[in-house]
Image 1 (cartoon, helix red, strand yellow):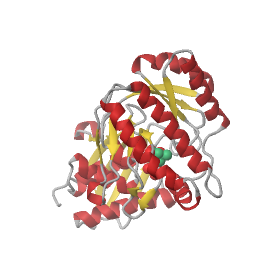
Image 2 (spheres, protein in one colour):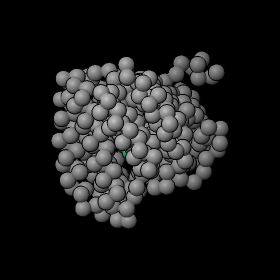
Image 3 (cartoon, helix red, strand yellow):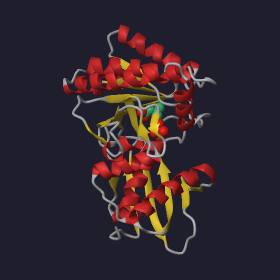
Length: 328
Ligand code: PMV
């Protein structure tokens, strides 16, 4: 600690899980009930500048040019408390973030957000900057952020504890996605609350956790064998299982809208016509359709009637921006 700079800027991209994370076994340490696997995207980045303010008594957080308060600010500030505790620093910070995706609409802006924040904060407060350490730290902000530290396909190990629960890169075939944004509004129930509810009340939760470990082992094998069809099948069925668990909570939560379901059906119809595409969706109504890169334009065109479509590929891991680029 102590060898940080006064300011740093980092950029990170969201990820979409092919084997989902849904449930924690330790809320304080943000340890997941099971491992998961995702694709970091090359779009919808978050860029975050963190600047120390030696005179300030509180952290400040600005998102897309708007000063934040309430839960958004306290989430950032609690995360920085952890960083300060590790760094032995009392200094408060000004955090300025810019999201290229709508916030809170199930496009994982919390993943890119906390991956960028962990990267910038580690540089400024002088914490370790190797990928495993950054991933472990990002995990504390938002579980899925652990995976956005890593480029391309990432496995997040459930681990035995804080030290072993981080994400790392996995060899996989080239993958692309068509993101279908059916609704940009903020989701009604946060993934944090809904996960808690599923773990406490869904009669299917125990089966979800054990079957996720099996899906992950199968997925890792499919990635190793570069078996796109198997990767796609596991992706779609695992997403539907997650939404089944969410919908079976008490009171029930439903993230998928009628339009989301229509996209899932349209993707089944595409497969019947010989185009290999597979659907998934996170804690919101938007659908990500997994395809081989060469099929992305045709699939995007086929799904354009359901919402805004955007073809994306595998993206880079979180990184600091050079000071010059950061200033611009
Ligand atoms: O990291 P969180 O708390 O935003 O949870 C993410 C949960 C899902 O996006 C629904 C699944 C996943 O693995 O990303």
